[in-house]
Image (tube, rainbow, N blue to C red; front, side, top):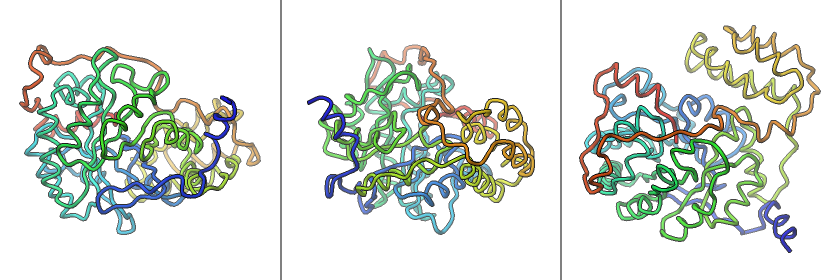
Length: 396
């Protein structure tokens, strides 16, 4: 019976089995969200993923103060193109005034969905009481969510959290209560604690527990590497949709697989190296158009590593790719591998971007003494402080 159940969990969706993800006026099909990831989910990558499939594609995290100060790069990363519908932006802020003002500004610019990040585990952030430390103080979390919801008006606001700080200090259930009470349209749970970072297996039981405790949609995040993983997560947890993060790095066609599976079709086989090379070039050209060649090609070095991981000879190839300065150099390096190389099975679940280490989360001195305190933590104000934080921030 167990084997039969496991096999059924890996089958494509049955007709009518799943529903669109409803976020206020938005109806998202398939119920799939591209996770906001710092340094990753800029317009070029979002547009590439969208060309492969459908869903909700969220920007990388944008700091409220950097946006309001008119920082050029912050504004660029928050920008979009007319064809991006719906337009979704994730914001980070620890001051309710900043958050409310930014929400209003984004709506005025045509943004149709706002996500709030309360899952960032980066030490520089938690040490100040921000990121994944904020849900420890429900009244502060409520002030921030309330400010965004009021500022956004009819535009749906969602939040993203982790399970908590560590296994002995969990916050996700209370965060769900706050999100529901303050008018958030959904809550996404990365089913790991801040101390776990990206190590081990995500705790899908926590997703199920959160889904059972609130009436707003719960989105599950953690260990979605194949379309079948998304279906299985929804079947075993009862969540309303999935958030896809590391699994799509260097694999934007994952969204085509997801669209097929949710529509009841078997996804196509993964591409050979020749097709991967074409997609990589397309990605690079979009990056150059958006950022300009020098910045784009510096960023493409990490993408080259993600796209080629697992292919025979890729370790030697990456030694060249991590130094490329031009599109021509990138193509010359890629041309050294045969086009007919099949996509390696080992690459599907390979670690990309984040390792398997854990950490001890550092909080401000005395932070746990008064969890009813709703005083906003210190946040960057000067241009130099804002840029330093933006470089440090992680998507959670």
